[in-house]
Amino acid sequence: LIKKVYETKPVDQTVIVRGWIKSLRQSKKFSFMVVNDGTTQKDLQIIVDGTLGNYEEVVKLTIGSSVEVEGLLVASQGKQPVEMQAKRVHIYCLNAEDYPLQKKETSLEYLREIAHLRSRTNTFSAVFRLRHELAQATHQYFSNESFAYLHTPIITASDAEGAGEMFRISTLNLDKLPRGEKGAIDFKQDYFGRETFLSVSGQLEAETFAVGGLGRVYTFGPTFRSENSNTARHLSEFWMVEPEAAFFTLEDNAQLATGYVKHLIKHAMEKCGDELEFLASRYAPENLKTLEHVMNSPFEMVTYTKAVEILQESAKTHKFEYPVSWGMDLQTEHERFLAEVYFKRPTIVTDYPKDIKSFYMKLNDDGKTVRAMDVLVPGVGELIGGSQREDNYERLTKRMSDLKMDPTNYWWYLDLRKYGSVPHSGFGLGFERAVMYISGMTNIRDVIPFPRTPKNAEF
Ligand code: 4AD
Ligand code: MG
Image (cartoon, rainbow, N blue to C red):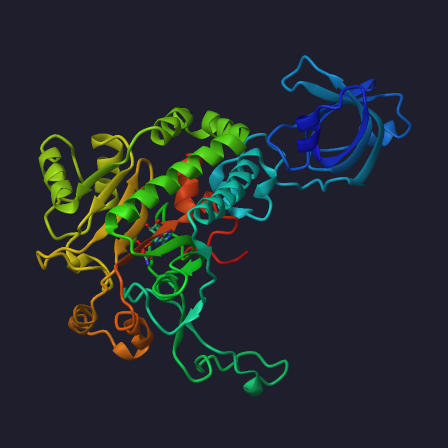
């Protein structure tokens, strides 16, 4: 692997590498090929002498062709500390002439149309190695904090957010499908006669394991939302990390979230320095400095009421598209203003009005606000949403009936408030938004392998 070559730098030794040609310069006497196998940001330069046996094939190679090269590794004055002098070149596949990634720089918009090929670019291989490391860091962090990884179901009858933004599941009735005939498929059947949906969040199921069961659990899985938002930060299918802990107050929750985000940054810097540097140089020059600062300073904490005052005061000098008043949900521009312009750091907003938050959040003594928290970060806005949960049976059932929710789908959830109920809290981090934040990429479609948006489900 080319990653191993750079880790061990076996100078003066003969090694074999396999990969794809990134760029090349050819002449009758020499060929310079730049090769990568995807395991590292660093390409390997290979020099092929014109006297090599199959040189007439080597000069026909093109960008994107796949090769195996055996050669001598030597120290180099070039961009990388080592390069290779080829002794043997085996060609797996001479790339087809209509290869869409010939040009050095291609726009991100264009690359979204060829999502099956974009991992071959430096940008996307960097983003997805980073994404992998952030997933590793997630498991590390929660495991160290004694949280057990819980796999919650994707098929469910309940709406965890109570927002009605769900995809319904129907069964393809094969009995009624005459062979070879189109248009006769019966999609009307529900999941074995029951109305079910793709999960919007694993929270409710995670709560059942946190309270009275394992104490501390986290989920990390795909979640689905049918909201028709075509923005740079919304997907119909995204991955969410949701810890849930018994005996946790909102303050404990905020501390856990702060520690988690800082751990993600620290791990990324340790494992993906080359990737972060490359992405910063191309898309966000200040990114590394900013991340370092975030890692080493406390997050801001402010109540919703105070945040609204700040925004109203700031509206005198800063132009917002939407006016702010107590009781309304903050828009992305407000979230970003608070984190980016006003506090200049990740900001945790707490105690939102109950009417703009989900049914399960714990009511404050004022009867108007709930123990909610959103973590807002520069460049992205809302990265995390969480809360202390309502643990009182009467108050929760009253809230659900005020919202005209059907309790039949939630009886099991209500049981938790009867059997050994305790204060407990949790949050959900949008994994793609975390990748955006740390990579500096500005469109959520560019940090998930195959984005699912209202306009895209092709491949
Ligand atoms: O704020 P949300 O809706 O909270 C929940 O789902 C809770 N049940 C979490 C919990 O307490 N266990 O979503 C949590 C996070 C958001 O802060 C955002 O980062 C991300 O999930 N998110 C989305 N990411 C991409 N596309 C969407 N459509 C998203 N909706 C939410
Ligand atoms: Mg939210």
